[in-house]
Amino acid sequence: MKALVRRRQAARGVFWRALGREPRRLAAIGFWSVLEAAPAFLIGHAVARAIEDGFARAEPATGLAWLAALGVAWLAGAVAARQVVLGVAAVAEPFRDDLLTHVVEGTLNRGASRDSAAVARATLQVELARDAFAAVVTTVRGFVFTVAGVVLGLATLAPQALALVLPPFAIGLGLFLASLPALARRQRAFLLADERLADEMTATAGGLRDIEACGLREPVAARLDRQVRAQAAAARALARVTAARTAALAVGGWLPVVLVLAGTPRLLDGGLGPGVIAGTLAYVTQSLAPALGGLVQGLGVSGIRLAATLGRIAASAPPIGPSIGPPRPRIRPSACDVRLSAVTFAYGPHSAPVVDRLDLTIPEGDHLAVVGPSGAGKSTLAALVSGMLQPDTGEALVGGVPADRLDPAARVLIPQEAYVFRGTLMENLMALGTPDAPDLAGKLDEAVTAVGARELVDELGGYEARLDPAALSAGQRQLIALVRAYLTPAPLVILDEATCHLDPAAEARAESAFARRGGTLVVVAHRLTSALRARRILLMDGTRVTIGTHDELIRTSPLYADLAGHWHPEPVS
Image (cartoon, rainbow, N blue to C red; front, side, top):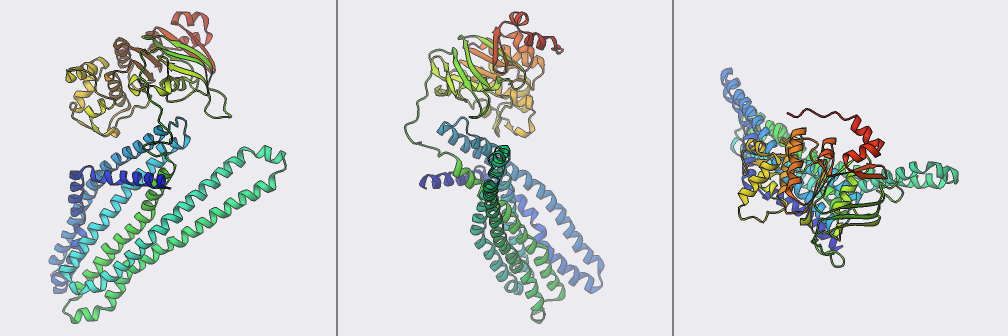
């Protein structure tokens, strides 16, 4: 239980760190929010003055001028709203990165290299949390600034009306906030019931033939019926709690309208004019009630989704920190040769092996290209060599050290989809460590030039340029990842189609740079030209492998000869 509490606190800490990381960005969001909330403050005054000073006095120009001012405020608010969305997005992306780091660190701490739940968290749940985070920040921010604008507007226009508007609004808001914990519990219970039903349905669908053959139709149907009833009960419980949102909106958003209308005679006796009454109603119906409705909808959906997703991540992620039992030490090998002995690997206990009793030796300093049809197991082999996957049987050694116990500084793996995070270009290039060199700037320039990224660095604005990963092309991200890997002292480099988004000339330059760099190089080839540059070629075809030079494989392997025969060299520009 204590471990679960710590994990939940860690997940929530990611939320607050994301908000507090860049105060200047939050200040900018606040500035644009004030401008966005200007119509909420102005609407009551504009309506009141348009009636009192304009239309009621047969001066339509004055009335139209006030309404035009309100229109200008709305236009300015629209521009500000766009800037707010951009600012919130800039805050949400680091939150996603932090949450993903939390998940990955927890998974690696446990050593669960084949944890399918971790894969789901790193894709669906983290993305859901990011979207919900952005929605919650946008909703709460808009509510706070709008309510502040309405209260300030009412205080300056009709202070007597505050007593009719604010108490029911506060009561409605309190009812909604009080219902949130129960709503979160019901939402979580519904999600769990839905997941259990989906798992049960999947398992049943996969075993229909056996169920029918063994005469288990009735007990299986009864079990499914229980899951369906449980899911339906969870949905009904969620609907009952959700009804509290409607009550909160009725009390906080529309009861003030009734009270203002009922209190109109007293307000008129107090010296307020009909235009001021209309302005007060405009504040409630056009600003206050929509703001409360947005909060109820935003927190009631996105807020609960964020809490539920963070809870699911915290409940299922391994704890970050000391694990049960002493952690296995990481070992830095004295050499970087690779040896696989009778290695077998499958992605499930009932799946056919992707790699089957593979024996492979890659001498230190070798340059090996891995080729084969899609799905032949090339990326699986790269993951086994790097220690990201562990063999089911056999052993994978690097310099005599089991690959999964290898010091991370001793090898670097670049996958097909290169990862670039928000930050400066320098931070991205140095993410795997700083090379041991007195002239760091010279080492950096050397790596950029060798890999062929000089034009990209200049285009981005230098090493201190801040990167937006979404604004970079796949090829640009790959170049950044290649320079990052080149800078590391790792003697073993594995490129898993790491140049597939580069043109042939850029690919050739990058791979040649790594070949000259020294150490052991393994390239999962995207183009056959990568194989032609290698000293040896490993051809994978299902569980069958063949190794040799290009000329040897042309003579001995019909599959390789067929691949070579269908390959047309791309023009090199």
